[in-house]
Length: 324
Image 1 (cartoon, rainbow, N blue to C red):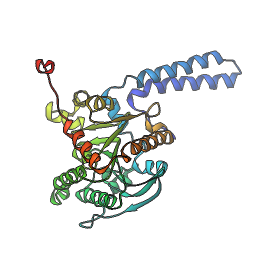
Image 2: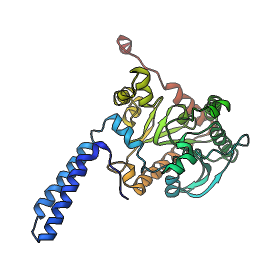
Image 3: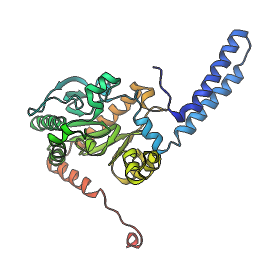
Image 4: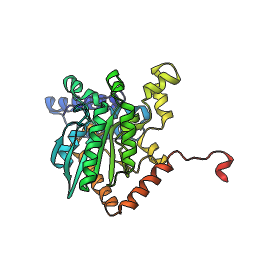
């Protein structure tokens, strides 16, 4: 797969171009440049490692949005078997941005709810760029209630810039649909595991993100607002998005430190878009491991732990009070 480079990857691209020129010159003129080639390959590895070990929050947001990053249905085809999609919310219609259905991961039968983006313009229009309407959240809740009825764990794959904010959404009560999901997921009597695989934007992500175990991919982000929107509000200019991204503490490491997520899933070097199969293997392994962690809990224990998990969020102390 020919991966489209991001701006901060251009030094690596330039070194790779020079390496290719060196190899071509060596082959055409039958000159031994083996030592130079090895030195250049080492320099490329060191440069790549240096860049990816020191990514800024904004650079991670760019990786999370990469058009070639694996989307939810890519993980379905690689991590799950026996996938059967269920359609419609039984009130208004079927939201293509929120595929839901039955599947199997390892030995576990489960229900999967997810947000799906498009790879090209036509698919993005069909999927509404991963921004679900109210009927998408109502469909997800309908499918989660099926999971509760049959004692199946729920897996949520989160990847959205946010719920769709247009007139149609407001007319069909998007805020109410998300609020009902938050309430109902808190008391759902089966294990819930959520994975942020790309963008985790605002209430649109949280609408399927109330879970016993919240996982996040290394270069994904999870935030109450996008960096651009935050920049537009605070600085009156979207150009300050990189500063906003740093201030929002939206990276996987920040979220792990703050207790918002429970586990960070490693990605292939350079991001999940460089190796879909390896990224899916990591996600599948993490899902199976976390399902085993919650599977043995009684329903009462599960609900109490979930309640306490979300009650702890937002507690902090500062200044002299911290010492007390």
